[in-house]
Length: 419
Image 1: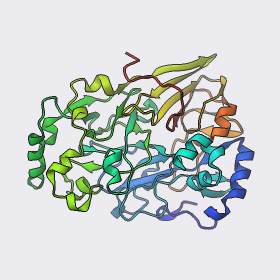
Image 2: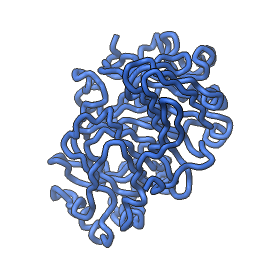
Image 3: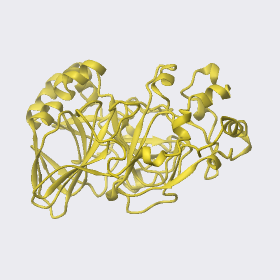
Image 4: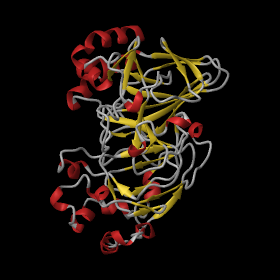
């Protein structure tokens, strides 16, 4: 039965204090694999692109006043920063024998088994997540704060990355281009004028930027403090576990962007301080004349065997640090492989059907709001390091995307290595 307006059935919910028994049973039964349920997130200021398999009748299941659902979050222990949110909005839930418990509670209970002692010891949580972002058109030119600036309001910074899976991009929607950064030579005074003109309609910030056509099967690495106005391809986004942002564009497709969305994650006494607001941008990265060369990601082969291949789709360092990464595994019909990684990952099946250890994998054609699926798995540290057998039992390729947390690998490719 569908869950009404985003709430979890209390009779099926295992509270944090009682999670140990169900968690241990789930880990033992799944061989270290945890089944996750779909996590839907609405955005009041965006227009759903309707490619993330949600039933057409369910895009406003949180209520029209909350806006349409245009995001699905994967392996998340991060709250969605939405006004009027339900208490668990953005959080992923594990499913075992009909009962559900939060992934963040599972990690708090058994962090060493689930994400490894090194990561749990340093962060005390799973510090990353991924999502599908699926919009009908472009969204405002915005940035996510650096760790230093986000700390001013008790938050964490948000570097992120993009990959455009072909399986979820059967159509382009309205604007398959993304403005990124600012044209080399742009001055802070020019940007200041855009902010001064906020209430006059279109503040003209896109006149200072450059749009890149989005290509299926490729991606981008977006450091914090860099402006970007994501276009209308459905995007898989491994990123840091934060939901901070500042919108620098005042009008998008005729829709007003309120000033409050520019300054929502800035100190209250700085909400009218234009120098401070501009100062939150990483200016050198925004006006980088080699922006594409330093941020564009093309897939790279990581490993392969008979009937299967594993490719890097997100890689590179953010300010010298390996904060997240992602791979795409493809198995041809009848193929099988043992997947062995040095750390935990969040997995989503995007094509075909098969098995992962003792769990079934099935790509849904359509999902009712509140319904359960067999496409999402959290591969714990315990399972990843021991090795998990994946089999394609269908008649088409079995394709899965999985993303990793910080410092999982001794080394990842650098941006540009695929050139």
